[in-house]
Each structure stands twice: as structure tokens, then as C-alpha cells.
Amino acid sequence: MPKKKKQKAYNMDDEMIIGYNVGSKKKRTSQRKQKRKKNKIKKILLVILKIILILAIIVGIILFLFVSPVFNITNIRVEGAEKISQNTYIVLSKIQIRRKHI
Image (tube, rainbow, N blue to C red; front, side, top):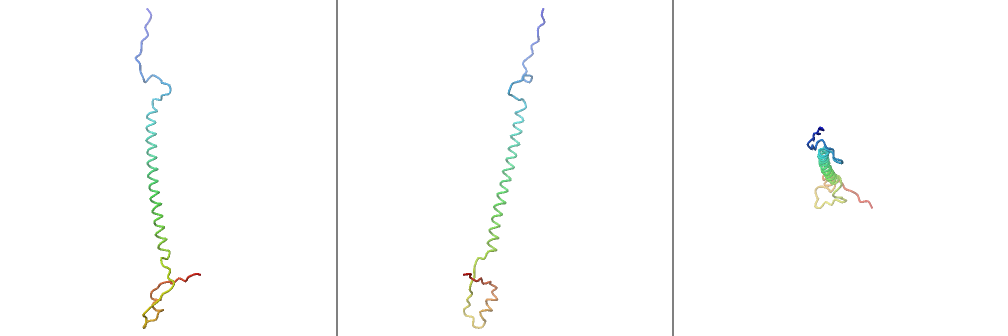
């Protein structure tokens, strides 16, 4: 009698399917997680950069307002100064008078 070949049970692990990688699903999920993590870090850095930029603009505006003259005083008029001269009041006020440029 001829010997019978043993039939093996079908085992999915031993089979090779064209176009299908066994470990690719794990790799894809780990790559997705890495991309999400990188995107999250990028978003956080962009938010921090925007906040720093807005704060820098606000500080710049405040500094500009403090440095620039708010009032351009061209003349000081003193009324009712009988005992003390007008120049004394002007000097004691410590106000810088700006001359108009014509």
C-alpha cells in the first residue's frame, strides 16, 4: 500500500499572502502615534510662539507710548503771578518746551 501523506491543518501563520505584511499594522499604529505626538508638539510650540509674539508686540507698543511725547507743549502762560515771576514758575515746573518747526 502506498503511504498516505499526512495532511497538515491549515495554519495562517505559515501561509504567505501577497501584498500583506504581518507586522505592518503595528508599525503603522506606532508611526501614527509618533506623527500625532510630533503634531501635538508642533501645535504647542506654535501656541507658545504666538503668545511670545503677541507679548512682544504689546511690550513694544507700551515702550513706544512711554518714550514718545504725549503732549507737545509749545508755550506756557502764567496768569496771576504778581509776587513771583513767570520764569520761576516755568523753571519749577520742569516742563520741557518744544519749539515748533516751521
